[in-house]
Amino acid sequence: MRVLEKLSDVLGKYMAVVVLIVASFSLFVPQSTLWIQTTWINYLLMIVMFGMGLTLKIEDFKLVFTKPKDIIIGCLAQFTIMPLLALLLGTLFHLDAALLAGVVLVGTCPGGTSSNVITYLSDGDVALSVGMTGINTLLAPVLTPMITWLLLRTTVQVDMMSMFLSIVKVVIIPISLGFVINRFWAESTKKVSKVLPMISVIAISFIVGAVVSHNAQQILSTGFTVFAVVILHNLLGYACGYGLGKLLGLPMTKKKALSIEIGMQNSGLATSLAGTAFPNLALATVPGAVFSVWHNISGALLANLYRKLEK
Image (tube, rainbow, N blue to C red; front, side, top):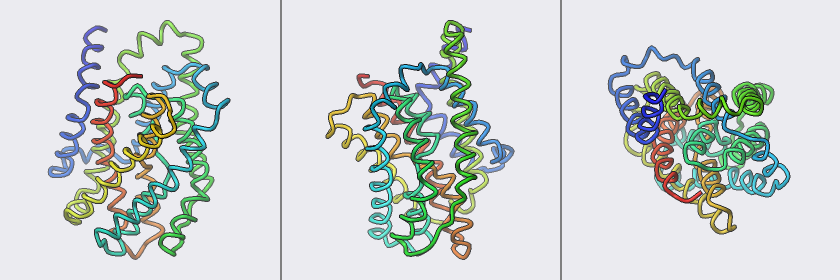
């Protein structure tokens, strides 16, 4: 068990390096990870969510839902900062219609479950992160198409029931199960929790491998500009979230959660929606695919930085 704990510490510390290596091989030698199926992604996230649930206590959720101000602030920031940044960057970099549509769609989507994992690895407020992801996802079937239409004057159809069932299956049920187990078998879960970072790193690496290898040709065909836009969109999202938390005088754990939740998007959803919403704009799916890769790399780097800051 001690060997696994040490390995978990090393992988958690060098998560960014591991993810970058996997992403590089998946991009330039896609056959190396093409065997990882995209259908596995939800199951990998469910495993990570279950592990996070093992670390949560009832007190964590009491603080979030008895004082919902932080979640409300996070929701407002999510659906204003990221869409406007997307439109601004897309305009400044003179993206063509297809790539602009894809970048804006990434911005109008809610935060994804990856943000919960990175918040956990950053020693941030996981309960706040999960609460924001859940509420934002439930609002997304209305807000994502509405904001996309306002910014692009084009319609995006979102399957509300599908999104709702997805968030229940991937986030709520695994976390609840882990939470219940931790509630009644706390001593046992303490031992297991020491290897959870290793499980999270492996899961994220597999997710990156699947996304990149199955979209390698499209990612390579778009050139430097879309990478620059995606990277700036993500980094500015982190900065705006952290700055907002600082402006409001939030404690460090909440600043971390707000920063990560705003900066990391459900880019998998954006990629999926782009394919159906913009059938005549093939490259509209590329920004979501690139974002999926980049935000896991940047999130890993940010987690290493945030872990060094006070809680």
